[in-house]
Amino acid sequence: MNQTDPAGSGESRNQGRPAPEDAPDLRRVGAHPDFWYPVALSRTVRRGRVVAAVFAGERIALFRTRGGVVHALEDRCAHRQVPLSMGVVEGETLRCCYHAWAYRGDGRISQIPYLAKGDRRPPRGVRGYPVREAYGLVFVFPGDPDKAAVTELPDLPAYGSPRYRTMTFSRTVRCHYSFLHENLLDMNHQFLHRGVVGTLHPQLLGHTTTPRSVEARYLFTHAGGKRNRGAGLLAGEGLSGKDSADVMTIRTEYPYQTLDLVPEGAHHPAFRLWAAYVPEDAEQRTCHAYGLLMIEKPRVAAALHLAWPLIRRFTERVFAEDRMAVEAEQRAWDEQGEDRNHEVFPLILDVRSVLRGNGVPLGAGTPVCGAGPSGGCATVTAGHRPAYGGTGVEFPAVDGN
Image (cartoon, rainbow, N blue to C red; front, side, top):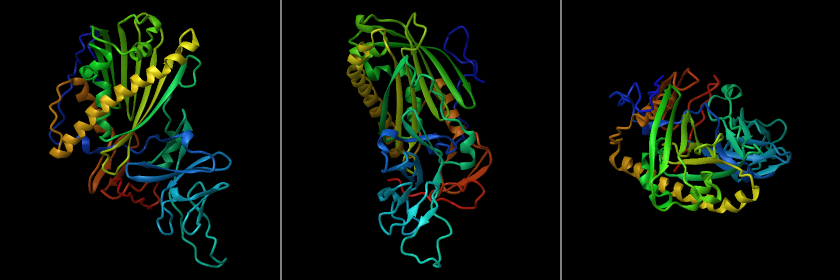
């Protein structure tokens, strides 16, 4: 474990070191599939409807049955490969729009309407993904289905708590997911947000690193300049607008990220953020950012209702500025064909090691043994996902562009 200096110098006892020369480029490391990933907002998957989703080039058809249950299937009919997301929900099954083949929630074919009783039928249907709903999101488990039952969803006690109200975010960002992890952890980029937060001085109080996580604590002080009203309301300053010294704790717990802000003198976070960055294309150069911002309710409940639009505009503007920066980083990587960053901040060197160590290398014929929490071996190739569950069946990926 890499533990920070208890004296509060912000320096780690084991300074973050550059990756070994033979370490893979982090931007060529994919998100490990053996976790629950959000792929849609629950409210978008309406009863009796089907919605297209994606994880790392794997197209997924989500559908909610008439009974209200959500299922996730490989988004291609076993017959002619037409997307099942173009299909029709009938009762508890999903029917392809082309030849009306019907599928159960586990991906098995339930009916081919024009075949006679003795006609030959396909040996299998399509892949069915484990799926769960929580926190207003639809999660799928794109990895080994046998591990889904023993892999927990993220624990968000503030969600649904009477103390907090939740604001949900869902945005596509054209960059590798690792840039977003680095962006949130490295609070030294506050100059980027000077137009909305004024002059902020972040002081790293310390950070802790384990094989699966990095946690950093910052002390924030406002040193002048115009501060957006929504920023003050989000930080729990209330209507007085009084500045305070806030402690912010940010944690990457692979593959998710959290942020808590506790104002000076407070006993509870003024807000808590949970975020997941879900790769969309096979090369993982684009991801979808899902965020749950849980804001503490003031004593006068109506005050938060009035402040909600201001907080939303503030957070959207900050996110837009962050997206501008990380997408510029991705464009530089694309132009150069490699990571030429000269990173010096030990905290970011540590999170890169965590992301690299828990992900799966992308590339033709890359063996993946013992990567991430699942152990075991699999092969990730440019056009295929690993074969899981010992079935001997591979599930081909499609071009995510």
